[in-house]
Image (cartoon, rainbow, N blue to C red; front, side, top):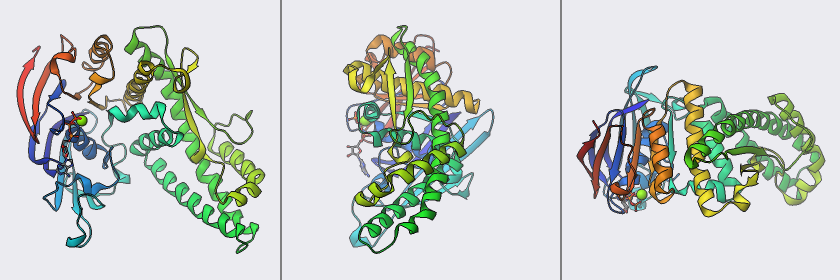
Length: 389
Ligand SMILES: Nc1ncnc2c1ncn2[C@@H]1O[C@H](COP(=O)(O)OP(=O)(O)OP(=O)(O)O)[C@@H](O)[C@H]1O
Ligand SMILES: [Mg+2]
């Protein structure tokens, strides 16, 4: 997959932008706060239909504007050429307009309206953000979000099941509190337990398969970044239910969850919240047999975060039979020069890579690939040079 053209209107600090791109490596360089990350965010928005940075989509609209628009022209061998347009309009009365808040979103593919769910899987893209370190280091919720984002962006049925499951957990939590207050009886939980198990089973089946495949890719990904024999493996972690059980199908996961729900029912009522299910699960990352979150050095954790994206790239490439667009935000701060060069040497010949940096000279650009360099300054982009052609 390749991004051929990106057009922006009133997107963040871009009043307008019309940028033509080709294959190869594209480096967007500039000082801090000029619009480099905003540009990657715009590409991601046209590919996936939402921002990787915020759920308050009003933030994406330029402060002095009412409507923002981002249009990507994509092309691939499998799908030909097509455009994705995302338009955002501020919601609410004029006096309530603030720099942020929610927005009304309209998505079009080749000019025809599409729902966000129906965009899933159309444009494969992998984005590395500096904040990804939190996937390794942060709270379990951050790792679940990583899984859910990735799987929702590529699978419509996952996105749908996740929405249903989230709704069931919310309703069930409300009901548990009502039971605790004596307003309802325990029997009223039964239909919600069934739904929790059914949707939860679906999510866990897809997640465990994805994590197993991602783990297989994590070994060469980590080795490639570090030129060491150690690889990174990833496991899906569940703290509830029979620890010896190893379900694989949706039905087996659902049955395990249904059993677990029975045993914790009274505790759930006491706490007024749902204690078992995929909304409590986690991921673990291992390098050389040790848990990177607990025992990894800063450098190992950064490398693991990047290896995770490289693994994701390889997995999507294999599953979708075309290389995703690779977006890398400021990886300079994440890796030393040798590791960076190893990564770009490996990926630039396979994929279109769009990356940002504050210092072009320090990137360690691969000597053989064509490298396009652009300068980003106060929401404008100038093409400056092409190297290596
Ligand atoms: N809705 C908006 N309207 C106008 N400007 C905005 C909006 N949202 C963010 N900005 C501005 O965009 C600027 C550039 O942000 P961006 O995150 O792209 O910088 P950057 O070039 O990646 O910098 P760094 O090197 O520090 O990461 C910021 O100064 C921010 O104030
Ligand atoms: Mg930035």
